[in-house]
Image (cartoon, rainbow, N blue to C red; front, side, top):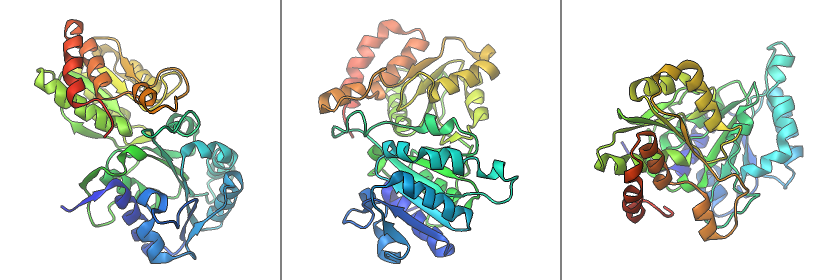
Amino acid sequence: MRKLTYSRAIDEATMQCMEADSRIFVAGQSIGDRKGIYGSTVATTRRFGPARVMDVPNCEAAFAGIAVGAASRGMRPLVIYTRDDFMFLAMDGIFNLAAKWRYMYGNQGGAPVVLRGIVGHGWGQGATHSQSLHSVFGHFAGLRVAAPASPADAKGLLISALQGDDPVVLLENRGLYEVEDEVPEEPVPVPFGKGRIVRAGDDVTIVATSLMVRESARAAEALAVRGVSAEVVDVRSIRPLDEEIICTSVAKTGRLVVADTSWARYGFSAEVAAVVAEHAFDSLRAPVRRVTLPDSPAPVSWPLEEAFNPDADAVAKACLEVLGLEREIAVAVDELARDFVGPY
């Protein structure tokens, strides 16, 4: 199978869906420039032009309302935010209109707007441009929320979103945009609410989302050298959440580490821990460990930013702790640091 980068997979999905459905249009900031939202709208802009691919002003709240209104009248807007932090300005349209539309009007039509929000660290984004908001969006009934971690899922989940009848929030980590992997040429949808096993294992389950799926897979490779078999679960979808794949894996391994790109309190990692406590508690042989951001806003300094964000090293350390291998942690961390710590 041919390979594509994450950003090109998004671009291809957008083009294929727009070719199949004339109601789809794209709007956002920096769409028409040379890089086209970091390369994810270049071919789409070239193919369809300004009639269906539109640069819009920095008016997030106003355009969210326009997009929801257009969706309620039969159009299929795809709105892109260069930073998901900017979606805070559009939350009335997302939470109070799009998410509740179908419920409030007795299932008589909906507002199937698709919103792409981009997040990522690595070049000093600071406290207001680097927040992963999947837990915030996942809290609200009526929304579908996903954080694809692979090029194939970036394409497949966007196709599902554009073909579906519900409002969708897709959160994409900029650190994944240049990752290359196999992607089907056909427009194959990936369903919401269905996770995947990235790597099978028997000793500990690592449930991860977004960029931390990749870091967890790297940690699992390093742990395998030490004789530890880690199973990596990519949930793909935040809402709905594939509880079955999580609990089935924990039932097999008896241990759980949750790796997330956001904070621990009231977040995705807390939800996963609660699901396991409710449905697979008897399977646990050790307390759940969470690998998340420190409980503070993000720094802007690149060295501090690198220290602030969890990586494969932190995931591997948490796995050794739940396995009761604390004495080996210092050695393992030193070994991992040579190969796994640092930016991609």
